Length: 228
Ligand SMILES: Nc1ncnc2c1ncn2[C@@H]1O[C@H](COP(=O)(O)OP(=O)(O)OP(=O)(O)O)[C@@H](O)[C@H]1O
Ligand SMILES: [Mg+2]
Image 1 (spheres, rainbow, N blue to C red):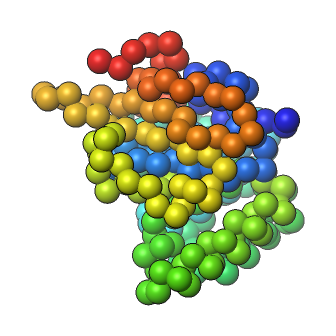
Image 2 (cartoon, rainbow, N blue to C red):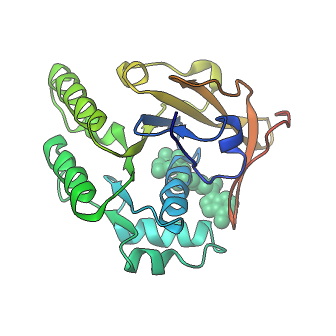
């Protein structure tokens, strides 16, 4: 099986080498759990390795994403350079519309040879629909389109709680090929970050809940360590 290395320290080890190529994976977590940072690093590492990457931001403007990520990861000093060279494309569509998003993704693949796509966030797409049934139909159509395209996609998915035991699953969790859950766990006087690979179709993977940190040089996943 072809795999795409996320490039995130420790994560590829948990995934037995990386995310299965051409799949659609959700990064699921509560507010501030690190979803954007994770997805950004995935796109950044791809771009750095010469794989054109597209980051579709449906919430924050492209300038905000760049500014925030430069502040979050100050040691990744070539972000602007990669953006300028178009290896790292950060785009905020003027309106949230599944057809428009599909068009942007298709064009990026055919015109720019994009291999990695990030959609931040699926929840914004859902909110743009008045009728649930229309959202469902469009989501299915969009995912079947993605299956025929030569790109690996990460989508952020918002959880309405930061409590691990209160997470609820929705349609998206069943239709995606994989779910990586990121948590900002309450430990009384502090919060700690942890993640788990909840599902990943077609591959064995770690089933441990492991701590991670957002560090200036990137996300570090501490494989083999316990969450206290
Ligand atoms: N330089 C930094 N060093 C350590 N942690 C940082 C740094 N910059 C940001 N963070 C942490 O990362 C968090 C934001 O992460 P991120 O934006 O990736 O989360 P998110 O899950 O996408 O949030 P949202 O639900 O708001 O979209 C901040 O709330 C902060 O705790
Ligand atoms: Mg975010």
